[in-house]
Length: 202
Image 1 (cartoon, rainbow, N blue to C red):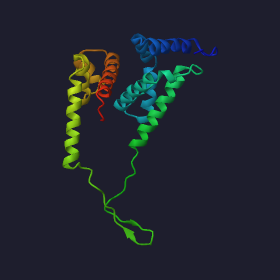
Image 2: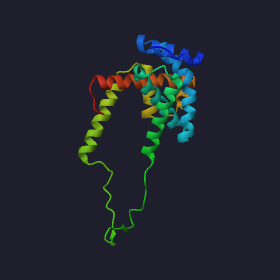
Image 3: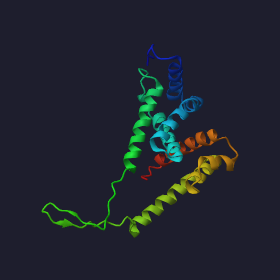
Image 4: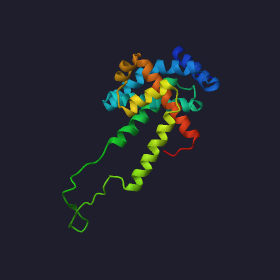
């Protein structure tokens, strides 16, 4: 894979890190790429969603998607450009899912024949069977989390079971904020790998 000569020195350096990460599974290369580009991607999401926790989660999701698709990266463009495109698409998908059309269910709406129609909204509360399936999935994930290394298990529990912010986790564990974000990224990746290896359909 030949690197385009017009790329900047930083872009060429990024490409070498991508090569090491993709071909040699070099963990230090993954970490360096994350450290180099995390802030710019985070602030992109912060502008898009105007919520720090959502921006943090979207940043982690973006790097997860990018690192799992490194074989698709072509050095015709800078890695940062490719990563930015993934991030933008991720942000658009997130905003699209959150954008809900709301209206009053107590009012009628015009019908095609000039009459009026009432709106019958199905309850979002799960029926007993759906509730059982959901509880089984939660228990399955709980068992998988228990298989993680203690530091990763603690991060997952604090973030998703106790609903703590990154800043609160950093303070509780007495760790730098950047370390918490990087290790939580790794913890989520490991969790996903275990789920996939068990062929869980969650």
